[in-house]
Length: 130
View 1 (tube, rainbow, N blue to C red):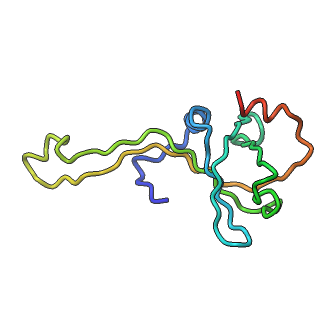
View 2 (cartoon, rainbow, N blue to C red; view 1 turned 90 degrees about the horizontal axis):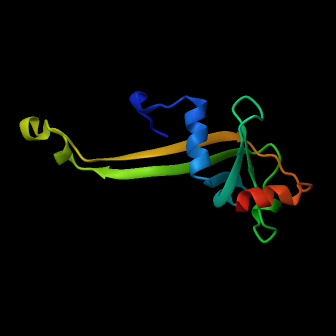
View 3 (cartoon, rainbow, N blue to C red; view 1 turned 30 degrees about the vertical axis):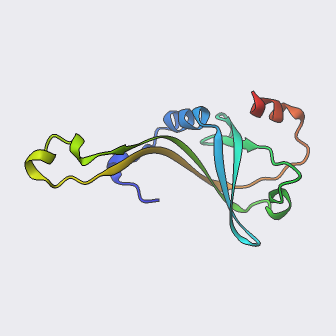
């Protein structure tokens, strides 16, 4: 993802805040049929590992649970606020006429390895529903 240096956010607590506020993530895997994106609710365990752990439940009807392999590279995208920014909003637009429109947004991309577990209790599903 292209990310200008002045927009980089590295504070774990802020990244966790976005994930906690926007729990519907997009899980992207490179499976047997190519790239696949699944929209899933995620639960964040902030105390697991160095930067936390994401947990999700995949329904048996979703072929993801059969196609994903433990250890596969995974990307989960959490999308938060976004808005169009008109060049007319910049005071210097009327002086220099060099501003262009942009789209400001807040998103967190989480990279990791997938772990598959079939022995998880209903506690995870209850947490995701809550």
